[in-house]
Each structure stands twice: as C-alpha cells, then as structure tokens.
Image 1 (cartoon, rainbow, N blue to C red):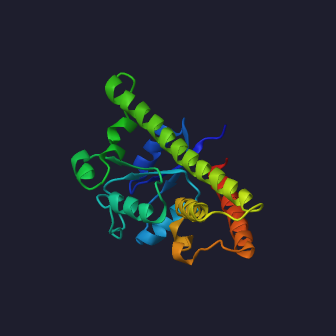
Image 2 (cartoon, rainbow, N blue to C red):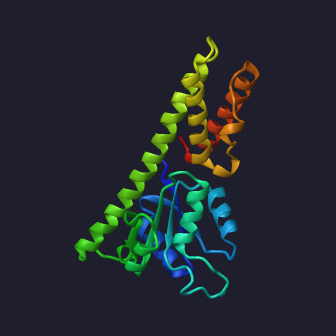
Image 3 (cartoon, one colour):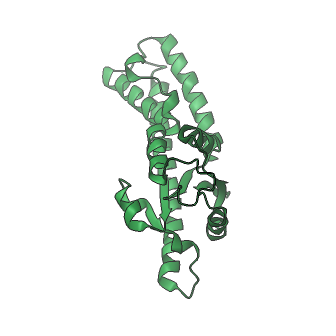
Length: 222
C-alpha cells in the first residue's frame, strides 16, 4: 500500500529535513518553504494533492527573505476556508502560543518529538502517537467522503427509475455540497442554484459526480 502524502511547511530548511527524517517511514513527505502570498501558498499545497498538512507555527521567526507576513495558524485557517474538515496539524517550539492561536489545541504538537531518541522514551512515544494520529485523521476524512459519495450515487440511481421525493432531492443537494466542499470549496456551486427537478439536470449532476469521483481517486489514490 502506498504511503499517504503529507505536506510539511517550514521556513527553516533544516527543520524540513528533520521532519522528513522523523516521518518518512510513515508518509510520503512533500516539503514546502513558505511563499510571501498566503493564497498562493494555499493553492500550491492543494495542487500537490496531499492528504494532510503539517505546518510550523512560527513561519516568520527565521524567515531569511523577510517577506512572509502570516503564521502557521493563519495558513491553517485559510486551508479550512477552502477544504472542509481537511486534516491539519501544527508543530511548534512555542506550544503555549500555538495553542492560544489555534481553535483546536489537539492539532498542536511540540517540535521536539521530531528529534527524540528511543532513550527519551516519553517524547519518542509522543512522536509515534502523532504519526498514528495523522494516519487516523486522513483515514477518517477519506471514509467520510466515500460514505457521502456512496449515498449520493444510491439516490441518483434511484432517480433513474422514479422521481425523487422532496426530502431525497434535498439530501442529494446536501451530499453534493459536502463532497464539493471537501475537495475544494472554491469550485462549489451555491445550494440555491441547484435543482434536480428534471431529467436534464439529473444528467448534469451525474456527470459532475463522475468528475468528482475521478478527482477524489486522483487526489486520494483510492
């Protein structure tokens, strides 16, 4: 089985290499140095088709270019605006600041887990638990999308033999919204513009679902 693809973003190249040494036994690590424009950074990461993101909390501290004007939590907030429930994590040397600046303290871990030896049993174990957590969150995210896709396809198959009830039509739109926003909210069609009251619209929706499934398989390898 191929490894999950995980992005790691840090302004310190040695810390990137350290993360690669720490996590490459479990993940296919896609490293990134931050770029000045936050939107460009988000787009670059998403275009790499990673399945989780780990980012340094303080992206400014050792920025040699003096051009980065956002922190790790701001990058994560931007990712969350674009991708629904995407697995994101923060590594930091300043755990209190990182916890204060992130909505979910469970995603924040100390950088020292990357360099702990087996003799440092407690910290080393924290590193193992972190890698298991990332795997678990990726798998949970994939299962959630797959379950929604399965139900959506069931309803669309039913629609070929009979007219869907109003609650079923509403469910189709909700499921469609969920799948689109899980892959990329930027391409999402607003709910109030969707309707499946005729066969032509149903065919359009089926075509779109096929494209979404194809994109999902490309991005997640399942």
